[in-house]
Length: 90
Figure: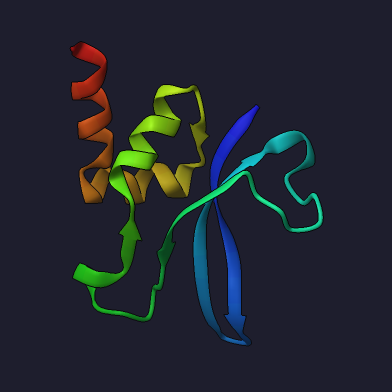
């Protein structure tokens, strides 16, 4: 199963995350995700925390990738889940 999840980077107590698409069966396959579609930096202000290529995210969701709970929440706030729902209705 393909999942959209966060991959942690950064120093101690200063996390930065990549939004990656990975196979959940071997998600930690030497740290190699299928694709990297954005970043999430919780230390930045609210408007610039999440930087995601929305087209790629919607495309992966359309292919059946399952977002984790955290990613689903972030995508809802960014409006990506609404874009995905609109694209399904077309």
